[in-house]
Image (cartoon, rainbow, N blue to C red; front, top):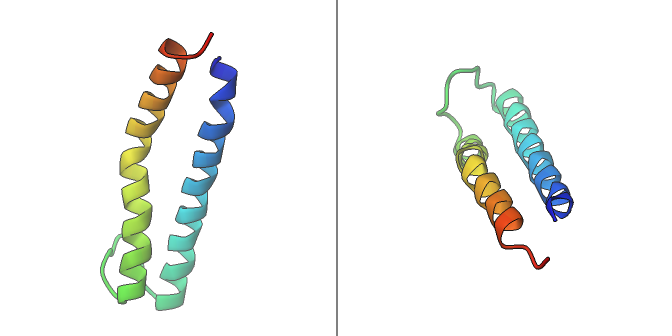
Length: 74
């Protein structure tokens, strides 16, 4: 059932928003203006975590929904 996939998708969208906010806070803390992506090592770790999640989100959601629709128990 596709309705069961919605909470997982929504939760992952919330995680993406959380990571984006962490990048904003880190930019302010370490005084790194966009579009710069280098600076303090802690900022770079936070930024990479956010970028990695953003890069893999479309793949994750596509596979989740395809598997949920075509391979569900019903």
